[in-house]
Image: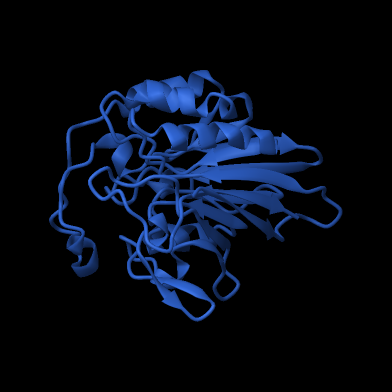
Length: 266
């Protein structure tokens, strides 16, 4: 059952009207994902001000057209994107136990995917490419900078290309995999909010007092931050989407339903 997570985040200057951001991630689209595609299309009815996609759109060599169809209503709304590892390489069969015991030095990649084709198509529809790039926009009376990185899980991130002290009313970092090096660098630049995906919320979560607990994050993010909105010691707010899809070879979630998030900045 797909869920829309709704969160308020206090990051705007006093007297500023609210801003609504639809955060989507980890679509992992294939031709068979009809229910996911239909639900994704329905999210346009929420009428967000912006759409941010934090990567892993693809899971099939022919999924670019499928992704563009699934995103079509949302592409009418201002938006931006970064890529994850599964925008560059297709899925392969591998043991889920690898995620429990670590596999940083033995990554297994599938066939190359048409990421460049997807990027050009999204750009042509007006979305901003934030892979190691930044974009400043005006919304009402405030100036917002979106500052992104390419996928850290594949070591493609080059935050130094966009680094620098905060220069706008609001600085939002965007990345696929929330590795500590990226969170620290964005915090050092006084980012207000960081959006990420990649973790699938743990994908398998255990029952726990107050909800459920992720076993893994597939990066160096602590498992307790695998899903939703968190903050540590005055650092930027971090919102991690549990995402909508899964690797086609591990098509299950436990206590972690697929989701998108409507973030209301106040």
